[in-house]
Image (cartoon, rainbow, N blue to C red; front, side):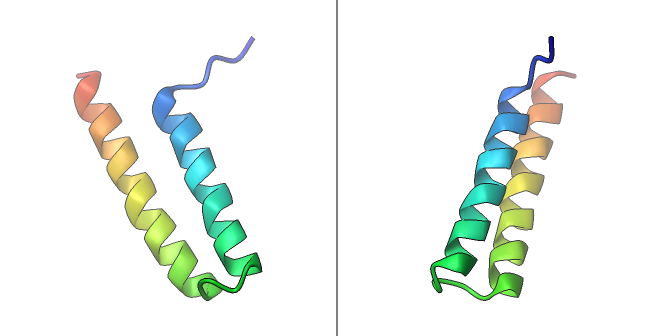
Length: 52
């Protein structure tokens, strides 16, 4: 059984949102990737701070 962290789940959701933004014409692939990377990095940083 795999237990996924909240940060992992939210990162996955953010990545899916980025894909939807590109497919829906709301962002270029680079724009969506850059924003998703920024958001996911923050999620991971916050998670890492919480488990120290």
